[in-house]
Image: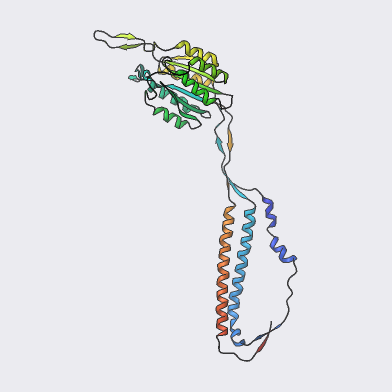
Length: 351
């Protein structure tokens, strides 16, 4: 729809007519004009009609220009269809372990086995897709922790970058404390309400500048809740020379530290031993940290005043060109008169 910001400007529309009718007209005086070329002027009746038509056309252009100027002054604008804004939900960071141990193939996927990281990409990717309205960020950590995606409403980018993450790109060890510290640094500048970190790992903190518990205490001071997830199967059958043997691929998982981290920050520690359990955990996190349901909408606004204003400029240019053509025509007419040899006696013509 079209809306006018200053509709009161339209009262100026009849102003030229008021000026024309209110102001006194110039007095006309009858006078006599000496026309030595009466015979030639007698043939100018057709030219006078053309001049009158052109004058009327010029007046029409000026009236149209005035109407367009008034229209531009009313500040017309186009208001588009309402667009739903992302809700101002949580600032949610996802910290994902991509150390070398995440390449362990102890997860069942269909008829075969898949690595831990492959399952995490699938499950966490679905979780990201469901978090419409939250600002999501992605932290990847191994021997070092780095921010892969800052907080954003663009869930597609977050999921894509997670899917494209190669195993071990951040190093083969696990720096849980550094990952939490980086999350605190990124979240402390955000509003204090609803700041959440979901940390997933399959090992123990064995490298880094900050210990996990120290980082968790800093997070608690900043009001950041940390949900920790220990991921990895408890049993894995490994073929041997004579017989298969059963091992625990998650023997190094530091359950105690992960539990304390969650307890210090008001979060929850959960254990996932399969892809199904991991999916249930992230579904439970959806319920623990529900998405805001209140929606906000806005209508895009586009100013339109420059369209009538541009039309005025074009018509003004047309009027100038028209006046120039008229001037050239009158000059040529005067040349014809002065160059004529037929100059009878003076003839008085009443004007």
